[in-house]
Every structure is written in structure tokens, then in C-alpha cells.
Length: 231
Image (tube, rainbow, N blue to C red; front, side):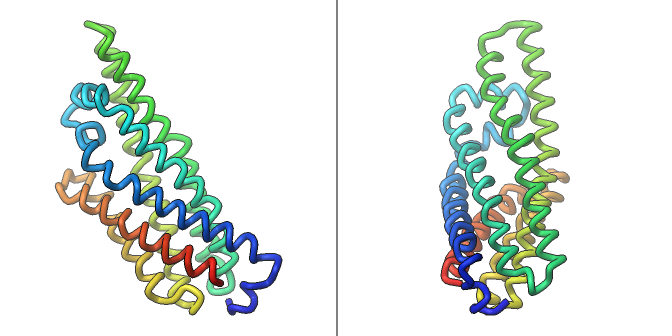
């Protein structure tokens, strides 16, 4: 799409709101990244019991991290329609799929993964106060939440970063965003998607792929927001 058509008054407001949303979303992801290594005992526990025990001291930090991700998810919902407007003439079907994938990602992450993760904080408090059979019941509930949340997280990761790859591919075909911005998104998506097979096989590289994918997502978000705002 040409620079002129992007600057038409009927689109300018949406483009700027989308630009600000994706920049702020990227900043929130950046703020959450340093928390991941600190929360390894809670995020990737050696057992359900150890995870619940870790959350007794890490509950506030755990909630903060997921809160940052929750708000960033909602901001990306605003950003992707703006990207659709900016990119739709370069490959409507690709951009529509990216838009749908991002919406599904947010629905799963906000509707399933994040609530289940946050429920572990409450279960941790109940677990520490219980004894015997009651304590084991909380362990069972936490195990179920971790299992379902883990599957939801993998699906959400696939959808989120597939959307980024598709949108970024379209970006490489326009001077509005440029090849550098598009390549940042493609790299982000590829690195993040490697997290899925790595976590399934139990590779120690899973954490590196996870953090690396999000680090490139931050760079892509800032670059995309800047270029979109100036469009």
C-alpha cells in the first residue's frame, strides 16, 4: 500500500492507536522478561509440590509477570487490526490469517492460560494451609491446572508467533515497514516456535528459545510501532 493511502484521514486514527498499542505492548513484554529467570522455580518446577512451595514466596512476582502479559495481549488485539489496514493490499489472505491467529492467541492466553496460571497462586496458599488428604487434593488440582495450562500455552505460542511471521512477511514487501522490520518479526517467530518442540522433548534450550523469541518480539514491536505511527 502506498504512503499516501495510509495517511487518509479515515485510517490515521486507527493506525496511530495501533502503533501506540504495539509499542506499549512491546515495552510490557520487555518488563516481564527479567522476571522469567527469577521465577524458574514456579514456572518450571521439578514437581507440582515444589512449584506450589515456590509460589508461597514468589506469588506476587508471579502475578506481576502474568499481569504484564495479560495487558500486552490486549494491546496486541488493538494493534493487529491496524497492521491489517496497513498491509491488506500486499496480500489480503495472509494478513487476514495473521489477524485471526492473533485473535485466537489472545482468546486462549487470556481465557485459559493466564487464569490457570494465576489460579496456582491461590492453590499454593491453600496447599500450605492444608494437611494430609486435603493437601493432596490441592496437588491434584494444581497438576491439572499446570497440564491444561501447558497445552494452552503451546497452542497460544504457535498462534501468536505464526501471526507475527505472516504479518512480517507482508512487511518485507512494503517500504512503509521495510525489510529490516519484517525480518525482525520473522526471526522472532522462528526462534519462538522452536520453543514448542524443545519443551516437548525436554531440551534445556527451551528456555533460551522462549526468552529469545520474546526479545526479538520486543524489537519487532518497537520498530513496527514506530514505522506505523509515521505512516
